[in-house]
Structure formats: C-alpha cells, structure tokens
Length: 101
Image 1 (cartoon, rainbow, N blue to C red):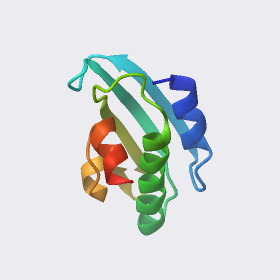
Image 2 (tube, helix red, strand yellow):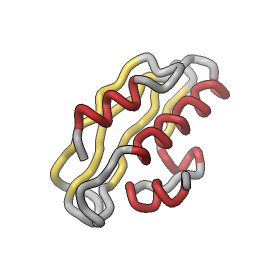
Image 3 (cartoon, helix red, strand yellow):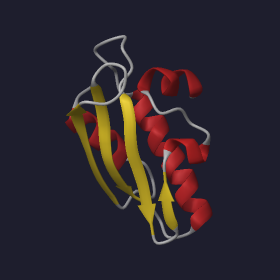
C-alpha cells in the first residue's frame, strides 16, 4: 500500500483534523501493517462516523498483494479513542474491503 495515498484519502474525509498513518513492516498475516492516528471531531457520535468513513477510505486504496495488511490505525478526539473493532470493522485490509463492499 502506498503510504502517501493512504494519508491523502483519509485526509480528504470530511471532519478529519489530522492524519499520521505509516506503512510498517511487522504485524498482520503479511508481515506488513498500517499504524498511526487520525484526528477526529470532539463530538462522540460525529467522531465515530468520521472514523468509520476513514476506514472506508482506507478500504478503497489498492493493495499490491492478496495478503492482508494489519490495521492498527486509531481515531483520537477529546471524546476518546476508536479502533476498528469499536465500529464493527475488521482489522485487516482484505476483510475491510469485504466489509465495505
């Protein structure tokens, strides 16, 4: 996955206040993972919606391999922190694409 592309598509999600996502070696079945943080609005309901839309954006980015990439990207706001399981989403790219299709 292209790190710059992931950061670009997530930054374009309405309501995102900051993005810092890295493609890292280690993690996931493939040995690769996405890690980092997404800044979200302070309102809890709005933050949840924006975070889910960010995961949807990540799912839209092409993966150069069929092997899943782990997702360790957290949404943070004054109202708390989100991870994929808190919005009912899987934690790897293959299942994330299936979830949103």
